[in-house]
Length: 277
Image (tube, rainbow, N blue to C red; front, side, top):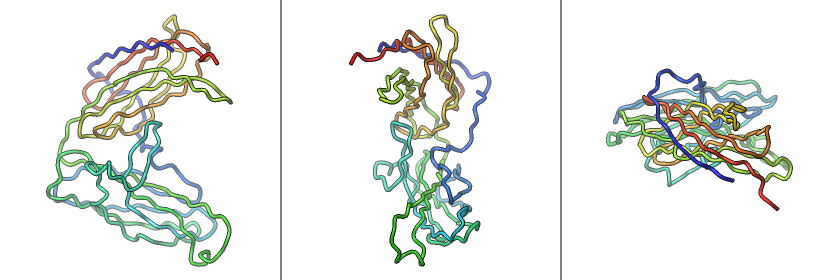
C-alpha cells in the first residue's frame, strides 16, 4: 500500500459547517441512566472556583443506586476514551480540584436528581487547559446486596475542561494515510488522520476527509468526529471507508479547522491493495 503525503495551510475565510456539539464519545448515553450536561467547558483564573449542577436521571422501571467518582481520562489511538486514575495525565488533570455532593445516592424510577460539583483552581495553577471527569456507576441497592445472579454495572460520564489563562492554540496535521483492515467478516480500508498538539491548550478539530478517484472526483466524504486533541500529544482520527471502486489509486484529502486563524489541508496519494495471503 503506497502513500504520498503533502500538507497545505490556508488562511481561514469562513467557519466550516461542522457541528460542535458535546463529544458523544466521551459520554455515551446508557440505557436506564441519563446525565446532563455531559460536558462542561470552563474558563477560570488561578485561585477562583466554580460551582455547577449535573442532573442524573433514572429511566429504568426500578430504583437504582449510583456511586459518583472523580476521574482522569485520555483518548486512545482508536479514538476511545479511557477513564480512571491516570498518573500520566497529572500535568493536565483537574481531578484533584473537584468535589462532588452527593457521592452516593439512590434514584427512584423516572426520578431526576441534581448533583452539585465545585471546581477550585489552585492559586499556583499555570496557564494551560486541564481536563478531568465525573463518573457515575450503578451499584446494587440495599435490597439487592444480598441477592445472587449476574448484574451489569452501567457507567455514565461528564467531561470537565478548565482553561486557566489564555494558552495559545497550536496544532497541525502530521500524517494522512490509508490502512487495510483484515476483518474476516468485512475486510476493507480506513483513512487515518494524525493531528498533533504540541501546545498547552486542547482543541476540537472540525472538517472533512474526502476520497478522490483518479479523475479527481470526490467519491466519498466523511466529517470529523469532534474528539478533543488533548495537550502535548498526537491524536488519531479514524475514517472507515467504503471505497466502492475497489482496489486502485485514490487521493485522500483532509481539510481541518483546528480553531485558530487557518484551515489546514493535507493530501495523500494512496494505492488500495489487498495483501497477498
